[in-house]
Picture: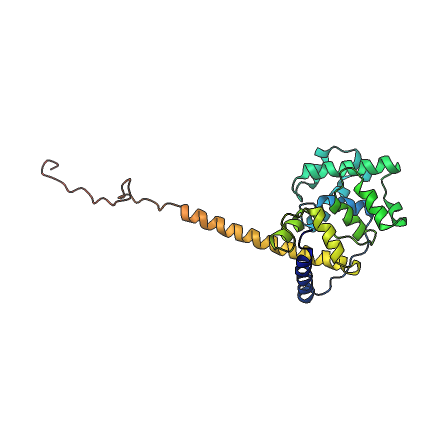
Length: 246
């Protein structure tokens, strides 16, 4: 990525500031790889908390993971729709990924990835149909304990907006850049703190947009016309009776 040294300093500065303000976050226990893959696919453009909720609802609505695999995208979309945007696309990605795993393993499991190296595990995940680099990195980091920094659309957009990465860099390029500049021992803390950072920036942007919209609507409102106001807004005095009127 262009100007990598400059942006590395900026990212490290923000990371240090977040740790000072929020403290070192507690790392969650490792998740099941298939479960984490689904969460990663759901959080492409949604907060992780909503992706986790959508995955939970999917688990509760279906008999097992195989039913998810054989369901239609429309059936899955109905369940996850209240929690994530572009639910049909997310549902299609989930179906494709689960079927890709099934074709390779004749079962829906990724437990064998615990026995291989991080690079091999990442390559396996990257090769799965429907799986992007962010979702693959999510599994490597949160399930396998490897060195990875998932960069979804929300994080990518925020990093660019805050001028922490090269504006022209793709999400995959940003992910590779962060993995080179954030140590493996800091990866989980960095991702947890950046989720908070992205969420706070998104809320501020949403609040600012709502305020601007409300102000714009108020400025466009026309004052109510009184009974004695003409078409051009000029007040007309009551007509005085003339002799003829009398």
